[in-house]
Amino acid sequence: MGENQHFDTLFISHANPSDNALTIWLASRLTQLGYKVWADVVHLKGGAYTWRDIEDVLRTRASRVLYLFSHKSKDAPGVLDELELARSLQRDRGREFIIPIRVDDTSYQALPVGITGKNALNFEGGWAQGLRELLDTLETNGVPRSNTSESMIENTWLKATAIEHAKIVSQPSRLWTNFLELAQLPTIYTFEHDNFRGRPIGELRDSFVHIRRGRFVFTFASPKFIASEGTHFALKEIGQHKLGELDVHPTLRSNPRHLEKDLLAKTWLCHLRHSGWPTLQFSSQNSNRHRSSVVFTPAYFGKAKIRSQIESVAHGRVLNGYRGMTKGAVRRWAYGLELLTEVDVGKGFWAYPRVVAYADGEDDHTKWTVLQSQRNTVTKGWHNDRARDVLLVAIEALANGKPTLDLQTGSDQVLSLKTLPVTLTAPFDFEILRHADAAPIQISDAEDE
Image (cartoon, rainbow, N blue to C red):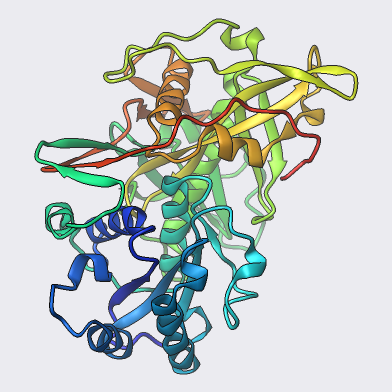
């Protein structure tokens, strides 16, 4: 079903007050990115007939219902009433009208009737990564948002007057993201084969980043570099654009954003080949594509703590270590890092952490195990200062302490990535009484991914 122009609001259904902290965090960030968001903790005022307001938003404005699924919300009467109405509207709004979001370790089997079978997003392993998956879902479903990203953090937090285990502090705060933006936008060159007799273009070597679509080639390589290839066929340049401004030939049925993301993804793989870093390749359960992470093994990155020079990271952090015996062998865990492409919300990469386990002395990377559940433990939440600092140290290690990480494209253009992640400034600080840091990683035989 196409989007009705009146259905332009993301409705957050959550347990009050236990899930208020995440609700306000999520509402503020979605609003910053141009989405209209409605949640009772933000909008309802004292004395209002709350169900009438909620029903009005669901019936006349809601484009999607974000159901925060938790121990508290699965049995909360108000949440169940909202879901019952949402399910009745879903028949006309489409199957993707309700988006379940798992925020703690509640079993998926406990999802309410009518929600089971849906692909629930996972915020339990980290809010930042969960937000990224949510943004991908909203984009795929064509959920409307404004063209300008207007910050509403102050407005949102001012209205949060009764958060359990939390308080608002009247001082500016710095909000870290896990997004690394490009220091300058690279140029994408478009070439076309100038022989129109139907003969194949030929083969370009795979050592430099490029994408072929029919008789067209998209690459970061300049015409001078292409000419130096000494190929037996001719390419002529038909255009060049900065990343984010690519416009493909009208006869070519390709989404420009997808082409740009593929070019960045190939750049990360190309850089891994050039760097010589220990790399783990694997296939994700949620994608047919092969993915690659650099792994911080002691041989390449040392056994000692890495002392960070990045502002606010006060202590050195360990990126690898021993954690006991498994099947008669000492098992080691190592921190891993993957860069995921982004050209819509920003121009650059999302830094995605991983945890890898392998037997002590094992050099065969194909036998390494990606531990998804342990990753969720050691990197639990981008709002967690400990996990944030480890990721900052990992990025800094890749760049050898330089302010940019220069990604090789195999050609004459280098993509410089800022090592200091994007930060946001809010006029008020939102202080949550956090639990103790996560327990140390325990190696498991289960291979989760």
